[in-house]
Image 1 (tube, rainbow, N blue to C red):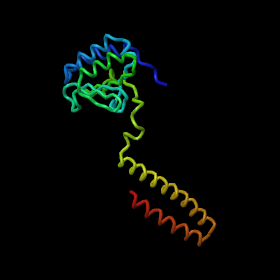
Image 2: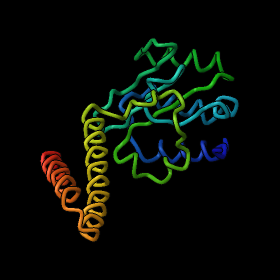
Image 3: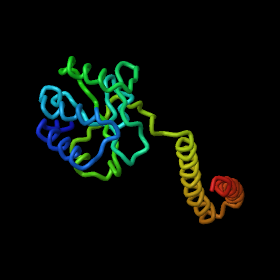
Image 4: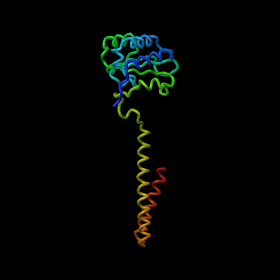
Length: 186
């Protein structure tokens, strides 16, 4: 279970962020300053990644990153109008608000990591690509073949120990097929 992040920690982080980064859109500064001064909103605010999947979220970008300057998402609708966003935040202070701050090396910033929460709305397989699935399947195939090869090695040793020539030849043929299959996979 995640430990809730205190309103004071969120305030401290937002102040630090505003003091260290120039934002692409000046209205973003106003919104963040408004959040600092309204604990009710900050109490319901969550800093996350992939905010576009959230029911109500805001993306704010600093200078020097390739993300859009400002985006507000609500119920599958996106706007770049900061004033509309501000009014929604002001009027719905007790609704959860998901915030994504995009700035240079954000994923390496310990201050951001301290307030960052997992976004519960990101689809389960969002980060899994078709290439990842293909690689995982290949890895499973190779692992299975390696296991079968080990089992066959034991059975071949047993056949040799028992002097069972026909079983040895049958198992050796299976070993050759598995070895060929492994070569194809690798």
